[in-house]
Length: 61
Image (cartoon, rainbow, N blue to C red; front, side):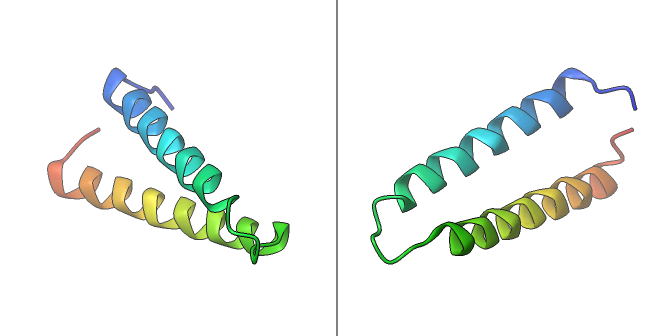
């Protein structure tokens, strides 16, 4: 797979979004590690799905 600048930028932005979200959630005392992991996996699925959807619609290589 040959990653271009747009793909790398997308991945970096989405990773930063997930990290910021998880860091904000760490303040919630009701969350344990297992629940945070499940939420992080859901975020990865949403972001990955959105990436492939945009890629398909826009015709990105």
